Image (cartoon, rainbow, N blue to C red):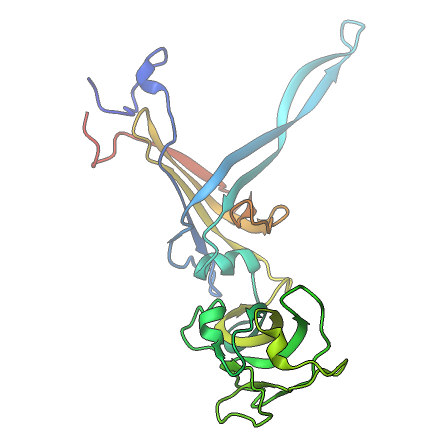
Length: 296
């Protein structure tokens, strides 16, 4: 058996059939001096297609008494590579967002709400055990009780005081009216709508809202930045000819709706429009003879 993807292969041979099972995309952005930067892989990409179109100009003739087309010449070519990116991190976000400003931040607010259940009066409830704690230590701020319900589901209007509201790590149901030394929500002994005791709420719930500040990288949106570079699509298939598309100059664009749904992966459709380079070239396709790691 010959090498996979021999360049001298002729048609009508099953070895020529290609299933592009190992496709990778690589992008290199143009730098300020006009040269290309490092080639960086786009990670997992899906729904990949390369659309290369040709538009023809017809020449018509009436030499035999009827209008006919006697010649066609290409007068316009266009190219577009469409793909979906779902590794939205680091350099990929720079390609997607095309931000003018990319800054490290430590104060991004994340708003959350949690429902906690009363135990016995005076029982401490640790928010770190009751909430989604991504960073091991959270600084709960603007803590507010937004709803109180008794065990039977009856809504209650409740008087409460929040101590150390900018740093509340635990909640204590406190009948004594004396604030604890720990950061707490102190529940008064009497409701504002009657003379019921706080102990009557044992087994009930109260809903707490708050925000925490998280660190990360902030990408500004839609700053009018155009991102140009070079794009490579490598098809190192395990069967049939292997090939590489190289598009010398492309512009990267978001190409559709970014679905934000709990029923599908978070992904972004992209369109890389093929441009003509200053030297008049648009790119090339190379059919490889074989991949060194594959044996036949």
